[in-house]
Length: 224
Ligand code: ADP
Ligand code: ZN
Image (cartoon, rainbow, N blue to C red; front, side, top):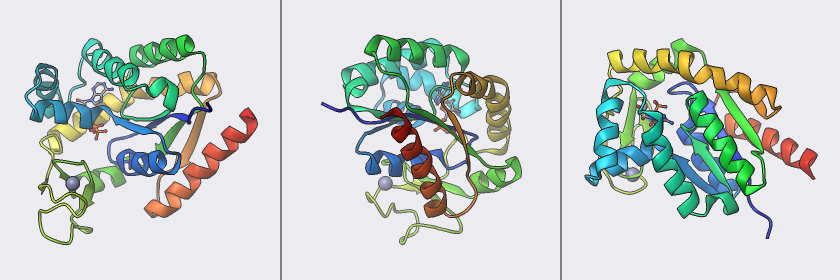
């Protein structure tokens, strides 16, 4: 059996990771795992891990590595993602998480195909986040300038569309700061193992997606 692509998506808050991750997962028929969505869903369901995580999230702090790793391992190993392929969105976010992922990949015998860094300037992500509205149920993202057809109701699933609790100005500044201090160092890590592709995240969703697909396909070709 040929297994699907193994990809991680990096980029600042508001760079478009969630939107593009869904499209990549569909296009390459692999699972999409968003740690943020996972924690939010767990918290809504009242799961202890979710409730613990949400306390950090609402303040814009990172969820501690051990909790993140526990939840991600469970999802990836139990879900068979190591065999079927994956798009990881929001993980890894620290060097500890990146090396834990490397360990799992080594055990599975197949390396990561590509780490994509979606690049968008800070002043633009601030604007995107300020207007961002998200479906509580399926995570589909909208913007004040691109709202759902019916006000407050998700086009995809009919769920409630609202502003995320951590999209406040204070929490957003903290998340961007943590992106620089905790997450940026892992860009170098993937650059050094020759897995990093930096992709311009400006333009329409279609334009960005086209850039991503050509980067992935170029990687897959050189692996053949
Ligand atoms: P954003 O990328 O805009 O921060 P996410 O939904 O990906 O949105 O993440 C929301 C929050 O969830 C983060 O601010 C953090 O508190 C927590 N989180 C998600 N993934 C991780 C991770 N890999 N490590 C630590 N915390 C995480
Ligand atoms: Zn929805």
